[in-house]
Length: 555
Image (cartoon, rainbow, N blue to C red; front, side, top):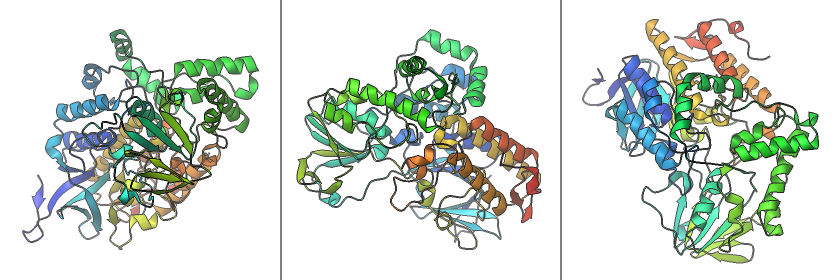
């Protein structure tokens, strides 16, 4: 049972507090409450479950992981009963799935909706975290689990004059629940990442005029989406476990897909063309897996990038517009590769105009629209498809403070530091699901979520069984892990792009690659080795769990 401290402080105490009711938080609640028998409270700023899929209601919002595998695998009955309707599910269907899971496992009775956690403070004496909400209420727990999501802190650029704009403006990551009608309106869309690529074609279907303000051109590939048949679903469900397992081990991303057959530099031009044609027709992010060396060899990457540039020239009728839509200076895949439905074709519409703000940035927003150079573009609505303060933003928005008064945000001033991506030294009993330096953002995140939740819950069970009150990452282990993650990234082409993977979309954010790139299978092996060695690299009640020599991260 939960217990309440003296009336004066009125702080309810739990075994664990979870922040965020997305897929991470829901599964963590189920594991801790239903399997470990712990008292748990989950705090969610929205009015419903779903996390990213609660907030991302923008037109065209769709997952780029096949829906049959963008789903939980922990419950056989759940796997079999849910019927996905499309290869790549749209936001409303994914949200319905999240709500179904919440109902099926009766999760909402332990969730406080509409409650934003603004602060969290650790007390050494009681070995507990106390969180404060935007309503001023306080709750405490032995364990604090941040399941706030890597893509949940929406980024709205600080354009001069935004408050003066007479029309409506929206962010794709914080879209209103009610449907937005753009019929007959002049709409400006800022940003051409994944949410821009998905929303622009849909908005253009009804708007009188759409002006796309593009700073950096985007590589994109067709999703090739389609409705799933009962036969297709049944074939996968018949062998669900084995198919999922093959994706976790073979693909690195956690999604079952054919392994690359060859290195690009070993193939003839005809063989290259054949492989790329096949991947283009297959659709989705699997396009980057045409060759083994796409993300490690510049020449191989250029061959793939040139293929997409040729496709853009073929699709877009106006040569000048096509040229603007072709990314000139970063490797394909080094920024997240969107899967689109008619993105490049949209620029053939008479009501769509592309404005490059690469050399001439947006100067300001006025009452009537947006000023670029000497021209003011008159608008009725603005859509910011400008992404997120990824991975660290949601955590840094909470004032997380340890007993020494140190803020997590200050510790991460020069880049996030977290051992295995689950804990940061100096902040005991604070666990992060799909945190920095874990695979998370470069994978099918549902796979990474399940692995993290299961590993963390097993660790908490270990701590409780052995009467250990506090755990935290050892600073040396953390430093070694962060260095290892950085070395892996430096062996790829990812650091060559100014992407949100690198934090480059946020002014002043340190330029650090935020993920572990060796794949979900390798990562799980590392985590399991740490656990098998008695959780080496962690500090238990002030003492090292085991020698750091028990687990070596470098190859």
